[in-house]
Length: 102
Image (cartoon, rainbow, N blue to C red; front, side, top):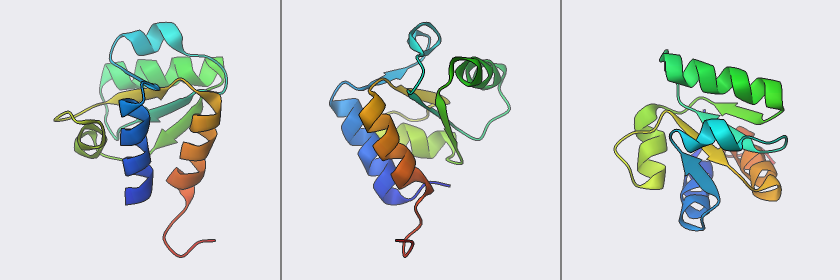
């Protein structure tokens, strides 16, 4: 589960044009991108996750659809792709770090 800092960082990445949401995710996945997937059993999320694993994306899970949506200014989001490799690595570090872990 992500911490608030990771979700805020995801919002900044989105505002900076580093994120994709929706159908473009399937056509723009590259090795080293971060793929953030909400806890959901939807066919779309499963299909996106499977393709991300094949391509070599960093898979980050644990947030709800509402948490992801709120972070990027939507009501909900099932998946978000971070296109920038350095930003993806920074997000992965923040995503896995709990408050007090240093």
